[in-house]
Length: 380
Image: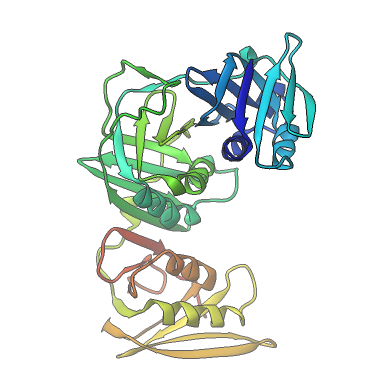
């Protein structure tokens, strides 16, 4: 292999794919980045056998080939080289030479034959605006479980049917649901190295995707307009521009989440989002313990946000609100409320409360595309 590539392009690609690299050391090749030439450039790929990230970049190919270079050294080296044209070549003994204007470096690599890669994805699927996909991810993943002891709760349920995409996450205590429109996928001419399988198109999905994969998509899709999503028995594929992400799915049964979403409320109110968030934030400063309890005192035309911890202090703030239903005092975890309010973009929020120990719903006041189900805390 003998190639010439601009340092900025190479570094951008390496930073994209290195997040999928396996640093455990169990499989040496998975601790590296695959570099493989194409007719009109090359692609870089990182993988830990569960998550695969591939990025295509332009390069001049003097001699084709492929090699795996240890990410730990190669990425850091390229970071330290000025933005100029680089030359990368390897020898039969898997030693790669990287040359720049004022110097060079030799790095011992691995054979590309031992690198686990997936080179075929379904020919069709669905397409969603990248902005809408990022919104789905941002609005749901914060409520997924952080503990690895419950793998299903560490994933996002993705449902696609009749042109609608629904994302659902839960940690068993709270639940988020976000929706967006989708359409049949378009082909991506830049993904020449990824063969399209002859499998029939699947435009309706029901899959549980690891949150780790979704957070990488959130990071990587900033330059995308549309993202194609496809599913087969191996996993889920996301493609856009010159980037390709594949992820294994989580196995198991996702909770029957629709059963816990209340349809009627004993009390509800509409309030300015920023004012409510600010009041909850201030009240959280006077809370102690893992539950961060704050009290909402709901009256005829206002909501009082209160926290009181003996030996610490008290915060009280009264907010104007449009209230329906009976007066009610109910407590919530301050952090849970703040995290829900942080992902709502609308200026006014709706908060429906079914009872002092029943699930409540926080959502934008004028949209049903997002809702957040959260349980009150026991008080008294």
